[in-house]
Length: 435
Image (tube, rainbow, N blue to C red):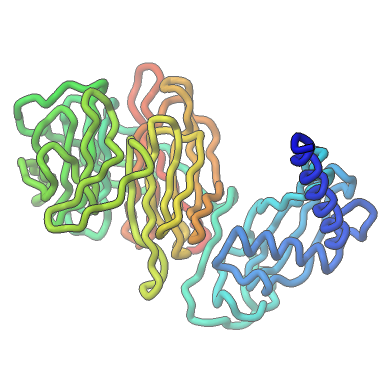
C-alpha cells in the first residue's frame, strides 16, 4: 500500500490542477479572452516582476495563435503604464498535469514604467511604436523590464588575449569606468570606451616579485580601492595598486587588510585552494570586520552588492562553483541553479532596484559559449531573463561598471578565441530606448 501512495497523491494533485485550470478559463473550449485569463496572467506577472503591481494590469489587448489544448497564444496587457507582450505556452501533456499552461514574457514594448503601485493609466501610441502614459503619473524613477527586445550585446575587439583578471574602475576621475585587464604574463592593460569601441590607453607589466605557489592555471582578482584598483594574481605573492596619473598607468605593490595569502574580494577575503584555480568556501574577514558566513561552496568568482531603495536595501551574494552551480544568497535566502561557467558579474542593469547576474555557460573551454542574465528576486528565487546567441570562444571573466558615465551599469564579459587571434569584450547593456 505504501508503494502506491505517491501515485495516489500525484493523482490528487493532477485532479486539483485540472480543476483549477477549468476555473481560470485556460482549458480548451473556453472563450479566447476572459477576465479569468487576465487574472491568471496577473498572478504570473506578480510572481515574476515584484516591482509591478499585478492588479494594475488591465485588458487583454489582443490574442493570437491557436486555442488547441497544446499550442500557444500571444497576449498584450497594459500593466501600470507598461504594455507587456506575453505568450501562454502549453506544455506537452503529462499524467500529473495534462494541460498545464505556462506564461512567458516575450517583451516589454513600453519601457517607461512610472509610479508603480498606482492605478493603471490608459496608454497611447507614439511614433516609435512604444506606449507612454497619457497623463503624468508620479515623479518616480522610470523603470525598465529586461527582455530579449531591449538587451544589447556588442562585441569589441581587444589588443591581446589570455586575460586572467578583470576590473572596472574610474582610474582618472572623469566619471567613467575604465576596463582593466591583466594577462597571463602579468601585463596590465587599461581600455576606455569610445563610441562603440574600446581603445587601449595604457599597458604596463606588474613589478617583478618572487613567484608564488604554482597552480593549475594563473588566475587573478581585482577589488576597488579609494585611490584606484587592487590587483592580485595567483602567480604573485603580493598585491598591487593600479592608478592613472595624467594619463599614465602607475603600478606599485600595496598591502590589503586581508590575511597573508588571501585575496581581497570587496567585503571579504578568500584564500585560493592549494594547487587549484579556485577559492575555498571558508571566507575570512577583513581586518577589524566580523567573521563572514561561509560561501555555499568553493568558487571561481564571487560578487557582492546591496540593492533596493535606500531605506530597504538587501545584500546579494553570488558565486559560481567548479561544478557549474550559480549559488545566490539574497538577504538570508540561499538558492542555486546548475549549468553555469566561470564568468560572473552583478549589477542593477535595468535600474529597478533589483540585482541582475551575468554568467557564462557550462560548456567546456574551447567548445563555444553563451552569455546569460538572471534576476535575483528578494524571495531568493533566481529567474532567467536573457540568453545570448552562441559565441565561438570561451568566456571566463566578467564584471560590471559604468563605461559611459551616464549612471547606467553595463556588463563586460571577455571572450577568449578558440584558435588564434585576439580576445573580444562583450558589452551587455539594457534598455537603451530610455533615452
